[in-house]
Length: 309
Image (cartoon, rainbow, N blue to C red; front, side, top):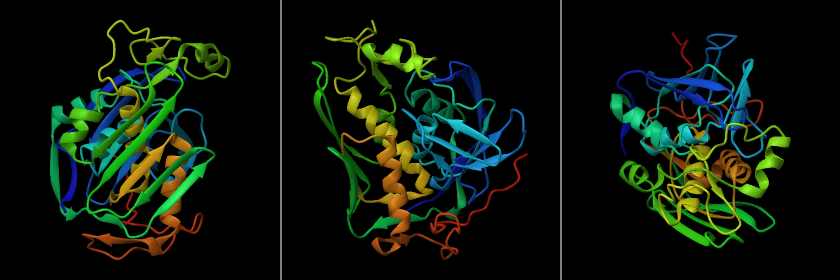
């Protein structure tokens, strides 16, 4: 168990959106205890804030997005994974566009940003949600499950009919050191024969060989090659970590995923919050507040969104 953490100073990056192809900039700023992760719109309705919470998640293709308070922000999973992976609990994320910069398609650039300013402990305990009974969501052959465990762990399996992938399985023990070394560098990937179809639907416009591993029929098109032989399944774990951060706190349990994706990841998060008889809160200083009227989801930590400066 540990105290909550935030950044020691603000840090900024810029790039393009993976799906929009438009310029995007982002600033990570320190936030007080119990703030959580809060996106702040610096374009148009300047200053409007939006918590990174499952309550605001909206259906999208090939990424995770939240919407509310007059704006939407997409492709948030990689920066959320970096924050969750490095155990940064309270931060404002200023955004200038409707999408987070894709950078190199992994969480590593965000990890380097965070490490460049440092992480500092705060004078509040970080709550943990400990799973006491299994929960599972599925769709055909796709499924993701969480079950009781003494530690936080993710086991992920993927299956693709491609010679470089086939079946890949990876087990990740959720620590900051393991995330930084084994998960953060894994990039997003896609298949060449799907690229034109994505463009026709207005997706993937910012995708290049600099930010996406592109698979041809027999190999990959990136001259630099793979960062890990099983980079594909590691990236799926990265996505899951980012999606699961919409829970709003750390968890203790074992997530087992097979052929899953953003929609099922976030569906399990919602199911967890809707079944409070299957978990307990640890390391808390206050009792949970009343359920949220809109979704009936209990607030697992004080829902304090301070007015961003």
